[in-house]
Image (cartoon, rainbow, N blue to C red):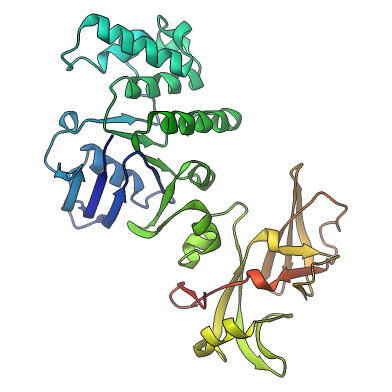
Length: 366
């Protein structure tokens, strides 16, 4: 086990293209940290710099306080699980796992014992004498994970390991990886573009966009207290609703006005947002805080909406509605709802509104 530290780690390619603008991150001993973001955000490049597969342009990478910038991958005591499994097709599962120990000065008996223990842990003992082409996608992924585990490295790196699996198998395998990581207690960095994977697996999450770290926090903190509009809309499925309007002073106090919607702002929040009164601002609200009648006492009506799409998902129903250029998604318990094209009475729980600066996207008034 180990502590992994990135200090201003930066990647600039030939020609001046900046892939990673500078990552500062401390991964604690035994922690699983997830790097998440859209394609091209720099998360895989960051992982590859940790692995030694990409050179570091600037900054320092340390494992247990020792700088490893210039060490080759084989000297870093890191094991990586790839999206493409990267198994040797001509070798059996047993030989693929044994190959990972080829540079270790271990007796044949110790190697066989470690392979057997790992195979039992992953429930792949019956597969040990098969070739990769004789395995399903899920079985190949377990073998790839086993090949990493058998080395007993200081750090595990996972590069979108579930991308090639179907939806049901993805869910099962992510649970399996989480259980294994907790059981083994190995410091781990996991890269994915899937925010559901990030939320369910990570002790902490690093949200990246355009090569920059947007926020590092626990899953719940990211969901409830996003630092900016990008994090707010990227984390959460379905994503946060965004309403663009103005803060105005009314007889009853400060209100947020967007189209036909006029929502009160409590006095404490109004004081924090004083500089925005009379000007534009962006409000965000999660779909679970948008309601149809009957509404909670803390909710306020927003009129003029017409149903666009209704998505029944079994345990919940998503209702998408539009009004005067504004869109709202409500996450509702299964119930009879208006059809597309029909008007709908919506309300928003104003206590859960978040506000963002329209120019910078930064959270304000929290």
